[in-house]
Amino acid sequence: MSSGNEESWWTEQRNRRSQQCRNATCTCHIEGTLEPDLALALAKRNRVALRWTSIDELKAQYEFEDLQSFLDLYYALMKTLKTKDDFKDLMVAYLTRANADGVKHTEVFFDPQVHVCTNGLDFNTVLDGLLEGMAIGRERFGITGGLILSIVRDMDIDSANMILDLAQPRKNEILGIGLDSAEVGYPPDRFVDQFERARSFGWHCVAHAGEEGPAAYIRDALDLLHAERIDHGIHIQDDHELLERVVRDGVPLTCCPLSNLRLQVVHDMRKHPIPEFLHEGLMCTINSDDPAYFGGYAAANYAALADIGMSMEELAALAKNSVDASFASDSRKTQLTEELLAWRAQHGI
Ligand SMILES: [Zn+2]
Image (tube, rainbow, N blue to C red; front, top):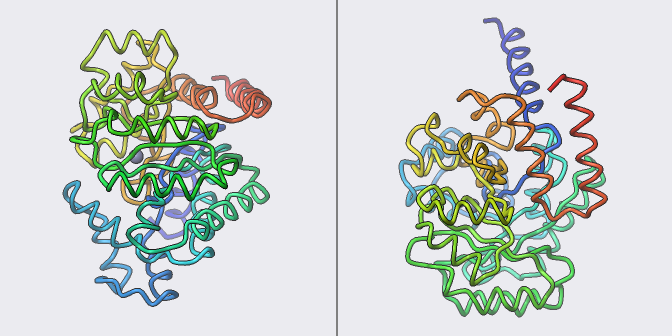
């Protein structure tokens, strides 16, 4: 294939993929959008010594073999983020990719405990940079959204409390609270006080549960943390009574197929339960988790499901779920739904 043909093939693939997730909303971790080229540029800009100096050397590290090698790289590269502009640039780079994928609204997790308690940054530096990046995304691409302050569940609980103290004066600039990182051994019942406090701030509550942990963590996230949305939740397949309850109550699950494959939560994409979940009436949505590390952004996740045989109609239903499951304003949801319907009509889906 000549390079011109190759380029048009890629453009076609890109267009096909962005069509599949047209008008979707998406969640991800902003730290998980740090691509190797930006990480190297930040390391140079901030004089942070990394073990990897060339782009090829660093890119090779993204082929990690297990959760630990992923986390080692993830935390090492987070040290390259130092200034407000770094966080702004990271957000703008992410929103540029989200826009190319057809994403219209995004609710982005950030992990201030790592930036502040481990890496010694000022909380306001982190928040200001991310918010500035989101404002640029709104102006440049029309992407709406907000930030979800995520508790890193395997860090000291005092650091979570300290972050909530720092966030309180700026509670109106943050959309919600989340719970992420290593799940097993850190069940939801440890975080009841922090989620209660977040609710007193007027924040939405979401939690990673049932990703590597058991279905019982999903139940506890609902009952004890009052989570409005469950991130991942894939192990709900092990508890049919809970699944029926979640269907009945219309609790959304933010599924991340490529992440599940990379972290071996599923071993074969063809066996991913999303088609079955959708059939059972679960409100699943498609998201990218840590897209720089797990093989792609929103559109790549939709494409992975198309590749296992999900129809455009099913993918459009997932996009519609993502609008309904988001914390966008009612008027924004109506607008996104109308755009999605118009797109479906135009393509006969
Ligand atoms: Zn996640």
